[in-house]
Image (cartoon, rainbow over all chains, first blue to last red; front, top):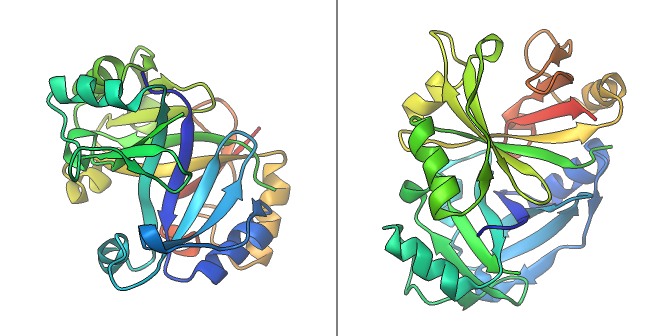
Length: 134
Length: 134
């Protein structure tokens, strides 16, 4: 069912410093910062040959990563995103297996303009998993 | 400098249950468990089209992931691994930038038979980073 690893998302407190780290110290290709107010984050994409890293900085008062950064002062990996061909079929399969889908359970339009769902970390080895329709 | 994302490593308490989750619930292709006593883990590789997930269970009394699992009862992402063409040149560039290399600072032979280094999470957005010579 799951296909490509679409991205690894790393929550950071200082997007400028983290972008410079990936660009200058690790020598990776990085995007300009992209504010996504509807998702409560500003994103920088780190383009690797086979996937991407997304550096996420909180944006606005209700950022979904603000609490994570309170608990993880240095930042840290916030979630990983797997692609699926059919997100509704994926959801049904997961629910039948007893896995918990977060929020309303209905796919939302994610940061790449495609339907996404988030799965409960306790059901997935302590890892917040995003599924994105490919 | 960094190239492909070689793998994302997830520490788990129950490798059998985590393997079944990735195989049966998430529908991914998984390997047989591979004990690596020299690294203190048993590994299952989850093969995705563009990279892999490594499920790590502690093996032996001095497993490097045992303390992580004490702090993270459900498991969690332990590290990410980027490939580099020349691990000694990468190390020099990182040290010049003030980043800390863990352990002796000398590359060790990693789980894939290639030289690896680990970098201090505090210098990399709270993320334990492994570099592996490609």
